Length: 164
Image 1 (cartoon, one colour):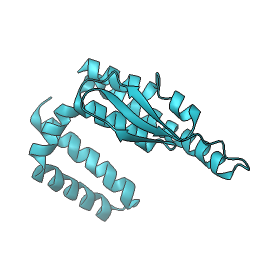
Image 2 (cartoon, helix red, strand yellow; image 1 turned 180 degrees about the vertical axis):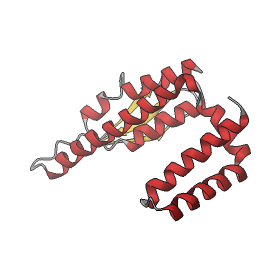
Image 3 (cartoon, one colour; image 1 turned 90 degrees about the horizontal axis):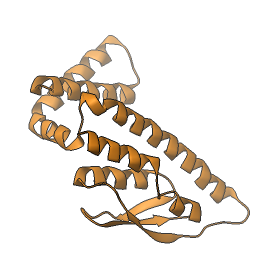
């Protein structure tokens, strides 16, 4: 993918983020959002273009990234409901624990994505995420700890890493 296409892609992504936060679709907001997104992308082009290579973003794995994002949103919602049920239960069924998790991911940026995905999911927090070796995760329940093994989010990240 050419440098200009990647810059256009970042501009589009920033514009969509602008629209999400602005929640206004009038012409002034659209024009302002596009100009600001283009300016931010242009000023930060060296950072954004090198970052895109680390993220393994390409046409071949764009569908995997979209699937990852969708599944992550669903998992965050499901885990939020589970944590809310724990909070409102008459008897707390908590069993806080630290769990060592061996990741299948090799590249540092993909390991960062896994650590952030674990932390974004309520009931789990990445305590330690080294560039190599085991993750240390704090889990509120036995179910949250057991859910790390064979987690489909990690499998999607492995697929993205392998495709690149």
